[in-house]
Length: 515
Image (cartoon, rainbow, N blue to C red; front, side, top):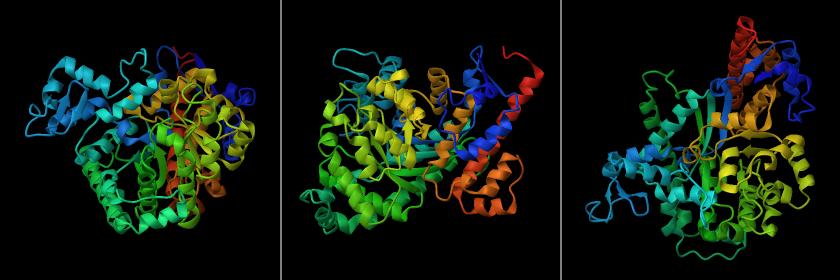
């Protein structure tokens, strides 16, 4: 198998590669005379894809990104228990694990059968469809099996940052819920009416409202401590060039929607306060199975909650899980409006999954609106296959590509799914015969549509000219880069592409065949 960029650039329109930005066209014109070739023969696709420059992963749940082995290691080190009946890690309920009816996680880790069963239980490894047990069930059941001490947040960051560094990934935008347990007693006695304006006032007048400032400080303290721990584990203080140390990390405030409305609204309100005050938190998302009873019942209410805050308490970045549904999983009527409401009421700048787009009312009109308004879709190929059984030609990535909707590849829960971002690029290439240039464009999109602060590199004519000529940044471009963290990472990505493509040209000169 040989992937020739030149050939692909000559037939982009035939292949449906219509998501090329204007700024890319100038670079494409420069590349048409270059004999770039991408070797994917003899099992070398992983090598090519792992070193391929990737901008970022914009749809990643931190808790789901950690591999099961790590949870078990930490549980064993921290004195947690293993419930082998339910195959879960647990905190002691009595003086010892045995008195609690369990064994120690250390014992479970040392026993090969128990270790295997726990790893399988905390991930989709070895999953086989059986009667009354789907990939959807297997995937979402893993999260109730995981337990770790809060102090391990930095360990989680270190794991995902190092993994990203090994794959030439520059940026992670991680979803995480930090203060959920503290909210429960604060809203227990609150009664809401369904009027989002009145309910906002009710919550802010309650014990919760009086504690918002303290909770925001708790979020900031936890993230600061976790970053210190992450840097120590990776050795960044001693060697800033250590793998993973240069991976930029930001967070999305993760709201769990399978709760009573007062808990969901309190989480969203807290998220607004966090986004106002904690620089590392750059957006908000709602999570938990979209087909859950409360998630379906209150979907429109949740959108109205976000809308009220967005219109009355400041605009913030919103990315929403919407359309992570399929025919058969839910009734047809529940496939008709989630993506539209996420955009038109929930103010989503990005859509996570968007799998049921073809079932939406006036779907063609909606897709064209997404293209015109640059509403990006976070594509999670393996997750959609496992949870929904949607893949290949049935996946709406085909539709999104055809109608110019911007998209980027992401992992969703790489630890649970036993994958990484490189795997998703490999799958995209093999399943859809994607040309090199479009792979490059998807990588760029992951930074262009990130919630990093600052303007996009492609907004600066000086920087576009400098990077297209492979030159150093001019003074005008440097001024722009200094003003934008997003543009700085985009510039790094372009430099990475130049180095990567230079190695491909070197290989081309040395041999006429990639075998």
